[in-house]
Image (tube, rainbow, N blue to C red; front, side):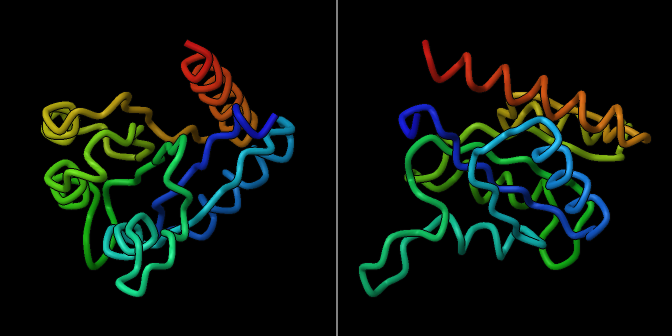
Length: 144
């Protein structure tokens, strides 16, 4: 079972949205490890090995990033630019999970090679359904 586990990094500054993702994981019996960073800088730190030889906080195998765009310190687009310019991190799949329905945000995100762009559901039941669909999709992708 551990061979199919996906290490999910949620990059989100809104505590309510973090709680909703955690609750949706639990409701869907999603057992993938969920790591949380409150901004892009924190996320980059969690993805990289520390200088003292310790492994990254988020294990390097089978990673998936769920990314909000509107965050303090380092927003989602800036995070994507840093991620895609790092040879060790650039291939990590990223799904944007945001409230931004602006075309410019969507275009910029896709230009930075995101795997998907999902508007955050308003209701919790839709949030649960979205997380279940996302989990099923990435689990199938890992089998290929």
